Image 1 (tube, rainbow, N blue to C red):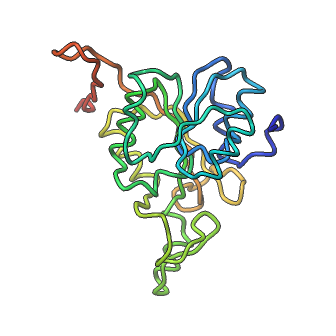
Image 2 (tube, rainbow, N blue to C red):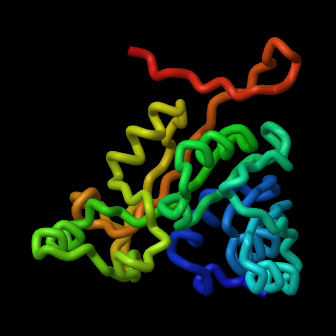
Length: 218
């Protein structure tokens, strides 16, 4: 059982601190269920994970973490609009084929969202490219030919996409080697964690609930 916050990954620690007690949480790509396990024990959270890998699903079940086995690329049609308070996507955004779609689905099913992803803007990545090679780092430990990361982005890239989808960023934390980075995070951080509020749900003309993605005001 995971009852010590020091036993989980640095971005999951940040998420665990941000998520309110007694909330309803969905963890997309939940892995072995460490975050939900910790939240269930320490913050009385009601949660469910979504995971495709068989062994990780079994690990979740063994920990008592409710889990649905599903490919995130298929969307979240099983879940109702605003069924959750918080939805989490940790270090998976960059591996999604349709990044915009999963963010819209996150906004549909929850009032708040949290994502973490490797920051492609870190200076070592650009140095590797300057030397003629794709970067291989702790946050991106794969070679160019076998990496699952297909949509790498910088902090500004994500913030621009979030704004276009009407996601209101509330908090941001940046890290390098598990240490928080405050100065020049766009260049010095290798991992970013964002907490955002999602657009409200409004009734559609056909009486089915639909998400209203508001364009930022000029």
